[in-house]
Amino acid sequence: MKFFVDTADIAEITDLAETGLLDGVTTNPSLIAKSGRPFREVLADICAAVDGPVSAEVAATEFEAMMAEAKVLSAIADNIVIKVPLTWDGLKACRAITGGGGKVNVTLCFSANQALLAAKAGATFISPFIGRLDDIGADGIDLIAEIRAIYDNYDALKTEVLAASIRTPVSVKQVALAGADVATIPPGVLKALVKHPLTDIGLERFLADWKATGQTIV
Ligand code: G3P
Image 1 (cartoon, rainbow, N blue to C red):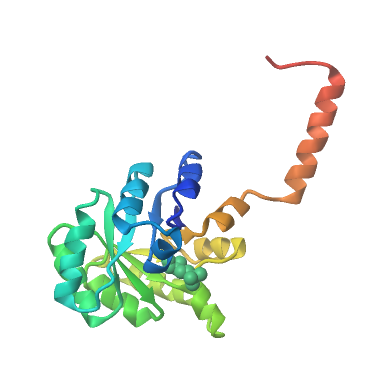
Image 2 (cartoon, helix red, strand yellow):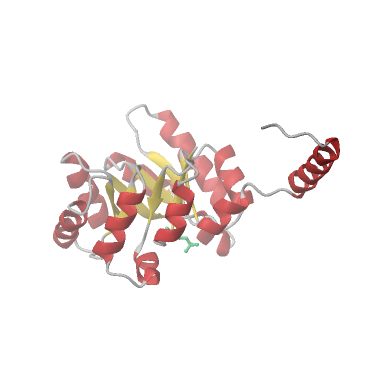
């Protein structure tokens, strides 16, 4: 499973990119707003910091305006992926952009039928929001499993399942078990994946025992 980081914070992105474990970045209008920076500048910086795909979302809701915004966003860098909402206009834009050789992330997916439509529209990624489903008492992980099963039924559907709206390390494990191709994860949750108290205790003991030998390796 690929790891994308869900943020527009360039310091966090650079920090995570240095681990060599970061496969891409997703942003949305809320995250760009949170960065407090002009969108062109922050997206250009992110694209320079990572080799992988960087999702940049349109703010328009109608097809023609989405296409005009997609053109501006695509010109920022080669690794920009255009993010469109899961509406008829968004799907139409998805078909037009991918038909022209571009990459599209269809976002705000909350049902398996929506994911089926996005795949038929040629989406590169579909973004089911698991946390927001959990928020209303539905089951986000079930949705990932359903989409995985549907896509696996048809060789023609090449869309990657990008699990989004992840808030906990447990959700990362669950979406991996359910067969997501990608998880987009907030920086804090991504960093928390390495943590286990028994790792810390074990390391402390090994270091104490090693120190007692008086030896050095180099
Ligand atoms: O990037 C979209 C998604 O990951 C948002 O997550 O926590 O605002 O539901 P959240």
